[in-house]
Length: 384
Image 1 (cartoon, rainbow, N blue to C red):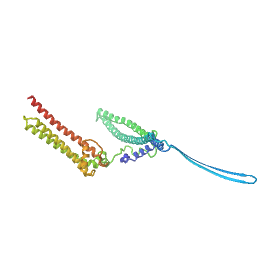
Image 2 (image 1 turned 135 degrees about the vertical axis):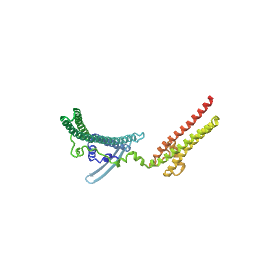
Image 3 (image 1 turned 120 degrees about the horizontal axis):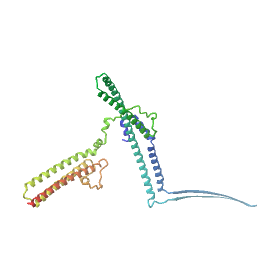
Image 4 (image 1 turned 180 degrees about the horizontal axis):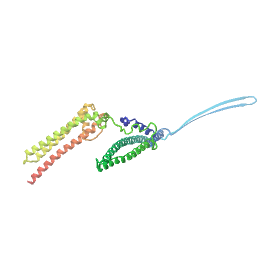
């Protein structure tokens, strides 16, 4: 959304931004720097070609005539010559290539700075514009409240003079009315400061706005965004991506599978440990720990297969072995990079890596709990 301010459908805001783009000094300077960087790039690029090119040509015509008393001779001679001189410094050490790369980088940096200046200008202008409209709305509400409170104060004053109200009610109404009146000048000053800030942002001196930029047209009206536009926020757009929608079911299936395996490992380990209590042996500890490690690793391998099947269904690989290899590299967060997916589904790699880190962490915690349990039983046996 390069023109994100258009979602507010506010013609005044759009005119202010257009005026700022044309008149703001910072944007002009950034644009001139882009032109300067482009010229420097144009100067650096000819270094690849001959630096000295000279072409010359000349012509000589000689007409000679001799005569004496008995004989007369005439001769004509044309002499033409042409030459070309070229001086070319070969770029053995990369001096010209590095100069071109430097000028190229400077050009793109100037473009990025120009875009950053535009983003900053648009954001500040929109923020000041909304602050102005908000202050105008507050001022309108304060004046309306002052009008109502003055009416209430007059009524209370009449009741007090007629003896139907005490002085406390009169002073409270008067204090409330005067407090509201005191807030109005502050809001008016805030509106004036914001107007001056807007004038500076669009490249004009503080003061009245020129024709076509009159801010009185929608005074006090805060621009609202349509509810349908709110559905296109980045968080909702992320859920619409096909790679995210394809990865979520597989990730949920992996979580459920890991949870089932962890529950089975812990329950079975506790049951066998309780059944063999008092008959502990080295081989029993080895058997139980091996079973826990085998089940957790098998669960992780099954999850790699699930991701590999997803890659095959998406058409990213032609055979299961390649898909399984790529899935294993992602799941174990190796990051070889020798096999990559297409740009459309490339985000599935980091998602599987995040899934793998979580699953390996859960598996490690299960195996750690089993090892600690073995240590605890062996320490208890040694004490006895």
